[in-house]
Length: 210
Image (tube, rainbow, N blue to C red; front, side, top):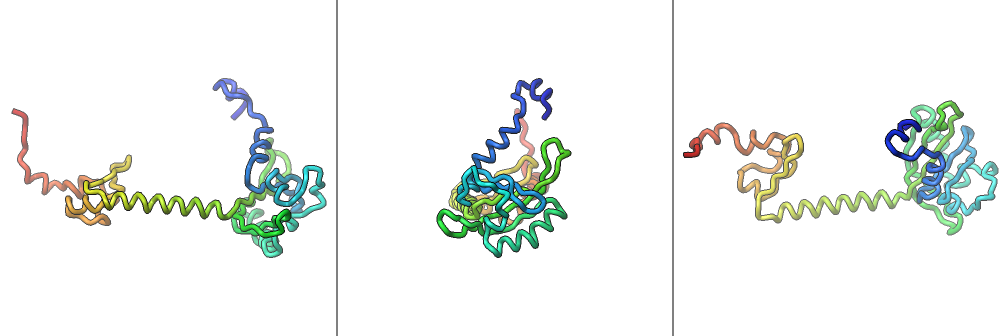
């Protein structure tokens, strides 16, 4: 959004420092490196994990210093070629937690990025996120889905939700008993075509108000 558009909509002007603040406050390990894999920026979470202070000269380090030998080999031989070809790579890595002398499993995203002006040199952005976080989110979603299914199936009343396209999205056991159709045959088609077919409707008298 341009400064003119921001002013017209009553929004504050965009400040690149906001992006820096966002990175610094992120719990993810965020690293920017040059085309030779030399880091020139680590956010606060990354410096903490690598046990580096703000005065450390990052040019004396390499991406290999932050991860296991196996992960470094995959980043070098698989990740970087993929980024050079498509601009993006995702995979799994093991980071070195130097303060606690252990390895941490992370989900990794590598991107080729260019400055906001669009005419500067490209660099490599590496984002590592704790692998357990995604697993816990997936487990929470699965648990929520199981709880919803249990509520639907234990309900004594028919429950037939319909989406904005008019299609049936759920059909509980009570609905199957009332309408005489198993769940798998009604998901997807418009409800009128399955639950109220013309042949069935035609058998009812046309009642009009007196």
